[in-house]
Image (cartoon, rainbow over all chains, first blue to last red; front, side, top):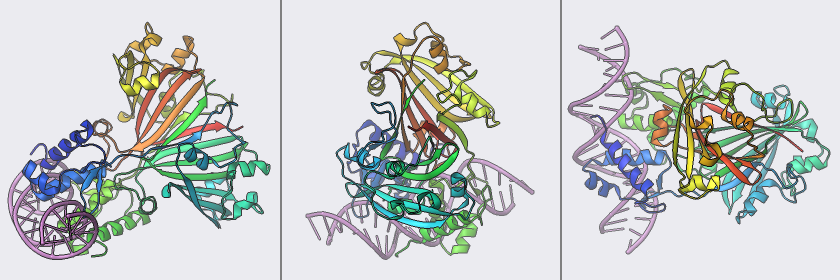
Length: 249
Length: 249
DNA sequence: TAGTGGTCTAGACCACATC
DNA sequence: ATGTGGTCTAGACCACTAA
């Protein structure tokens, strides 16, 4: 039993998907068909198909069949060189709205704002003490009405008290430009990127198929050595392409 | 049957892991124990544990038990602001060696160089015709002897003919600086980042546990509007933190 | 009603690790 | 020899979808 049966079946199906014999969107053979075709029991077929589902190649719903998934990728910018050679600061809408609209899709977002105390992680990134009051703006950003991205931004309370940041409403020009217009200077942005499997909450909110990892972008903005805000953006790995454009020396 | 049994078991185990009751590195109860503890059949226990394995929370080996995984994270830089305010170009070693050494680990790499014709994807990114000759440097980069990152860089043949790029040897100062010293100018780097589950080859070479996504970094370097090289770097999502530091306007 | 996938069980045998 | 996980089967029943 060198190569398990279910792996042989999985590899064969995978090859058919990658070769295009089973095209994206197409329904794959039913479990009964696969049992007959490969001469194995139902659980073996299910183990094979589960493996493909676990890496995001197939999906399906009870009662209907399983089909080959086709990704729907949007591009969003983490940093962008404009004609001026520097980050844009004169736009009329926030970056999410701009990025999504530019690709002919309809952006949207649901915003909530909370006042809470800093956890260790947030305190460290904001350079404040654990337990200090911070403001968090949580956004569920949508494309064509579907949840697409989770975005949380944390501010030290004293830096945003009395501003519209505290109101759970859309800020048309975007938070970054809004604060810049109020006089906040940002000299450095530092992003930390990683990939992981989603938590159960993330999977639920983003309606993630099993086998879909998320891309996590932790961004902290600094004015000199002083942190002014930090954010965590969670996006499904198969639905975004995060772009960084950087001028070289 | 609102909530399946195996999900109840999985959620319970997950909670114990996240609360620390089952600590990283610790062996989780055996299948027999879990069967007795939750009063379910073996396959149900296995379905629950498989779910945790599929999201990278537990791993194990036949004959031994299953244990809670503990990530080993390294930081690597995608772009870094130096004291000079621009990308470093005077270092003595390549960036991988520098990043890994700085964290007290031992870097290494296995290099192979191939001459081949451009596929559609590579041709498009290098702005040449499909079928044009290109050179690819493939590197398996290691940390403390373990495969850690897969790096492929493609060059149009005419831009690197007669250089040491064609030799499958380490270039101490790194390819970027080597070419810069030969007079190649790079004015813009463009990175595209995404997360996905690994291919079977990637999982094998990087010794990935099931449930580990990869972070894919596609970088193209331009001299003006002209692409001079393009690379694909594949890293396990749980083993790296990719850092971008960007000066703001 | 028929066909699909979803859940669960009981049991068998194999492969690996440890004592 | 014993305990662990890995593979596989046969069979049962449930839930969802579509004709």
